[in-house]
Length: 306
Image (cartoon, rainbow, N blue to C red; front, side, top):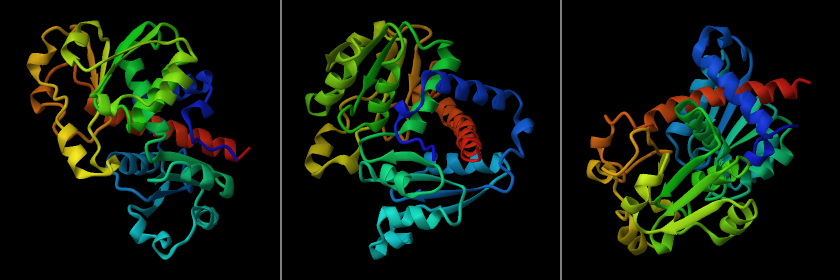
């Protein structure tokens, strides 16, 4: 049974197909309004989410399907001690496809090897978030028209940011991608990502603590929030949470066609004054997420029926 746990589960060709389908959905929404009629999506969210959960639900409803599930672990049998494996086996009796978010790395993978229906990883701890990566790739393609020959700055929490780890991994398969890693020393990209992804794939990268000096070279700026839920103590979080705040004056040296992205939610790391700047893409990203998840749900359900 085909599931999506890691972005590398998809080939470059499959990603291109999903992007093409998403673009067709944007152009011809009525064509897809009955594609999942009679199918049920189970959203198993053991961790809070607004965009991702509602994006999956909106995607399934717009395909003509229906949705069931829960939005916190306390409202599921996990509160009674039920294992992820048993939850997956149980939900397989009720639904046709699962979208799962879990605070523990590897939980969606455990679900996928126990379920008899496709499982989509909707985020597991600080590990992977493949549908956000697909969202990011669709946004990059729509904004830039390409995946090659780009300089991308990742700013903020690069240590715990699963969206950053997944997107860097995805971009490693394209040509002439330069990565600029902008963070405080305590929140640098983990060494295993540098070694296993950047260095292994001969990707050019630099590390800096200075956002403004990096700005003129960037085609894309990918901002992230400092995530309170990933910290072991409040003191460290409070010390680092305002490390980088993007304000209009910091864009003075930026390219006219810079694309500013953010997986959201934001706290205060992007000033609301940036929202009206034509270079701001983060709310476009939100909408793109619905379309790419529609394409993915269709693909996995079609493959499950073969």
